[in-house]
Length: 361
Ligand SMILES: *[C@@H]1O[C@H](CO)[C@@H](O)[C@H](O)[C@H]1NC(C)=O
Ligand SMILES: *[C@@H]1O[C@H](CO)[C@@H](O)[C@H](O)[C@H]1NC(C)=O
Image 1 (cartoon, rainbow, N blue to C red):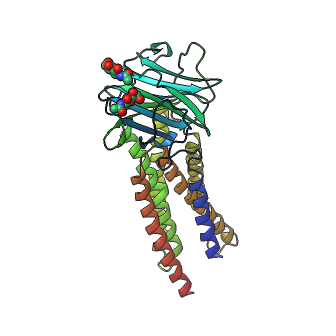
Image 2 (image 1 turned 30 degrees about the vertical axis):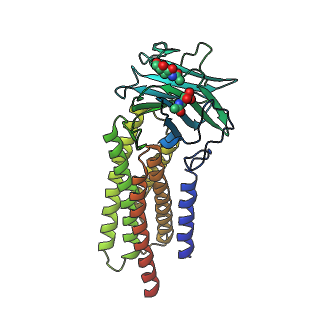
Image 3 (image 1 turned 180 degrees about the vertical axis):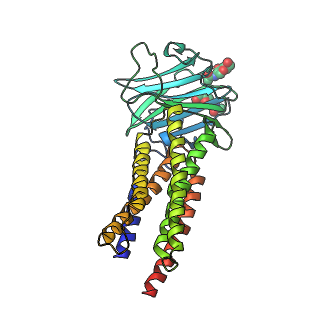
């Protein structure tokens, strides 16, 4: 029975994580296969993921006569995708290549003179696009925005954005406000792309607090309750304290998340929904603590079952949402590896303690 529960637990985590993997098909491990639809050579382009949360992949190469080839690949959401070149990382003042495919494909340069739609001017900008080099291709649910720039060195501050889902720009080419955007710095030599995202400290706090609160302390508290019963009543106070601390951290992290959502207006409905669900479970657990029946009571068995199940569900969703949040925030694999290692250690500890528990029985 116990083995089954941990098996189901792990299965849930695997299912949760695999659903986060981008379903669209393009990655830097596969070659571009656009069958000559791009008007320039694309075989030896460098390739880097540049915006993980939106699945943006950038390929580029400089040839000997200062022609830079670019192919930006992004999931098609029936809206525009854009790559802007900026001197200072700000949208205003930059020039961007923007493309979409509605009935036909459109690819255009824009100058971003301001933040209102009428200040974003089509067919203007400072990029010297090589004649007849620009193309936009829709294939396997991905857009490929291809163009060449004639310059000794393109700007390294790159801005990416996506338009509102299922909304194409009108016939006068005026762009509506983007759905999401990111400002990055690209090192053309190493391919390292770092996000210059605003509010990065708040993002980090949000991530660390939630990871620590819901994703680590709750697990430690659960391990305490399951394996240290022999030390009564210390295990109980330890369990309650750790979970309360986790709850406080998690609640602070959630509040940071709401503030971020307000500031960034990002497209994170699922992440937010799961977060609220976790908070509800957390509140139910706190209420369960206050309303727990006496040990001798008949209903205590059911209460235990309820408390244990709710806690397990909370942990599964918390772990999934932490990984999902790292993915959305484009925080990079370092965070995933770091958190994954902590989880691995906790699981190992739990397995050892589980075996000990069995041997004692
Ligand atoms: C660089 O690319 C341009 C445009 O594709 C092409 O006309 C030119 O011949 C290339 N130069 C070299 C040295 O490969
Ligand atoms: C690139 O720009 C230079 C100078 O403006 C021009 O001489 C050259 O023909 C351009 N190359 C291409 C491929 O457009």
